[in-house]
Length: 581
Image 1 (cartoon, rainbow, N blue to C red):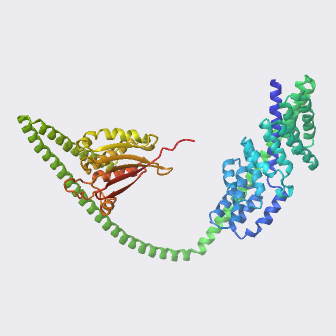
Image 2 (image 1 turned 90 degrees about the vertical axis):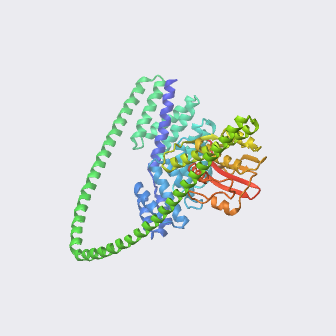
Image 3 (image 1 turned 135 degrees about the horizontal axis):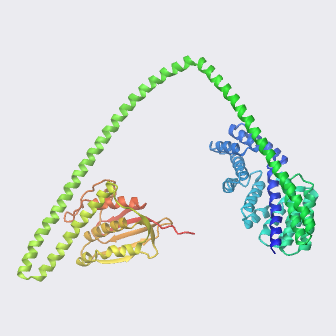
């Protein structure tokens, strides 16, 4: 069984090596002629002309460079772009960069002259990447196309590739049909190299089905035919396969003969590689010598140009000096304008800061004063044992303390945000439970005003946000909703599946509402907002500004919908958690 596995592996290796070898004849003559004829009308495009010449010379790196330069010109000529993408896709394939090759080839329009060749290349890439079904889809589209439409490629090659795909998929019946069909065509074409691989593939097909008697004759054909080639790799592999066959037959003397032949071709292949390596080194040495000569000539030319154009450069230097003086003068004027604008902005920010401190201190003083007054009444209620009034004062104290705490909390977060000290970590969060947790802390305040609250957020809503900043946003919006709601009002929080990227979180109340002017004022990007229209309910606007900053930092969006006397909707669009697959 081990021997059989070994011979099967070698047979496949023979096929693959033949496949690779056939690809080394990169641009056949027929195809080269067609490329020259079809693309000649674009030779006025300098970059394209160079790309075409390097493509035909099989210099893939230079082809990639100049075809990219041509594409960067943003030409609207579809055919010209198709040629450039084809050159790039073909070059990437030769460099074994298959993903880049597929990307370029898929950009080619179906009207391209060589579109059948494009499909063939895409199929070959899929075959090399072991994506056999994908390769079959490409090759089947080419199955009934005449050879003349391939510009040098053969129908036998299509059948051969289909046979290889089905062989790898263990569909032996289809593999046999295509491989036999391909072999017959190759015998007519007398394509020796491809026939060696084809015989090896058929031998593999039968051997994988334990049809040794049918496999070995084809294997022998591959061996005898390999002797007519100059490819040492094919000769070496064919000899090794015959050695394994004879070992399976227990004919060890003959197997030894084949193994010696294998070693001979192996040594020949190594010698050939060494010769090629030496030739490559000689070529590199010659190129370096030529480069040195070119460098010397360039140095001499530079010296002559420097002597000839000395006066010219002196004149240019004077002009540049004059231009530099003019430039720096204009820059100075421009910088002065920028400094004045920055001073104006700084003055505005300082005024805003002073206003912020003034309102914050006023609100804190008002809260402390209200707390002192409430504590005096609370003490009096304790002395008189007026428990009804005592309960009212305790609730009042709680509301005052909560308002002051929220103000200080917003002020702290605002300071941390301004100094970039706040901790921020975005991750997947379930929106329903965050709303539920935050709203729980406001239950006493809502009960005090007899406000009906509903959490209608979808339990399937997943958002990608920082949890603490989202809670802070919800606290501010719920606090405002309670503050501006009437007794026995309603507050509803719900979600809307806005689009594939965002969930909308809506905090809706039935309170005082606002007109359009106030809404627009609230949406302005200012550090400090105006106080609310109701003088009994005042605020710095710091909380809303902080919310807008946090929403933006989370990659979200914010808008307000409101109408006076009918309530307000605060709408926060939050990025969805992207699910895998």
